[in-house]
Length: 174
Image (cartoon, rainbow, N blue to C red; front, side, top):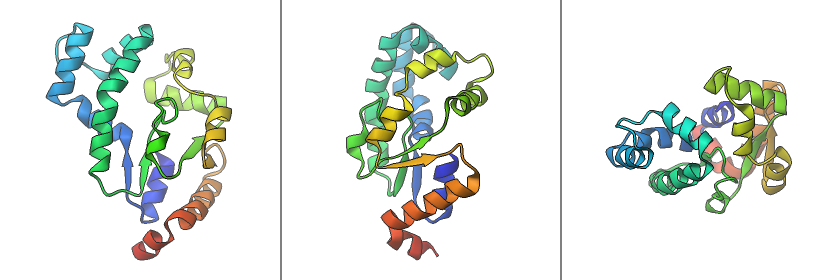
């Protein structure tokens, strides 16, 4: 999120597919579909769904088939320069974007971030099974941004890459 926030500060229009998915998750149609699939009452809580997906991997694919088109439609209606899409390659969505930047960090930092997001008891192995390795993502990306380096280095890389791709937009914002 830090990288996307920095790009917004440079004047780029940004969106987060995670934020959009969180909004859509609470819509009646999605809640009804999830409740029926899980055999749970509405509202289905994010933690309930996450636990079910960790137990049953095919459920994650079903949820992706439900959610990804809805998120994609919402993004297409937005005027944005940059879209943050966690698990972009894992969901095979990279073809939707002109250029793909990936953020990378070492395994210790990744584990620390997952614990911050999901709590100290998070099953790191299970979450890791949902993600491609850093080497694969880096090989598929157009730009790699190391977010485990000092913030000033990350910001410098973001500025250089943003200027390369969006010089007119950045000049307009200044």
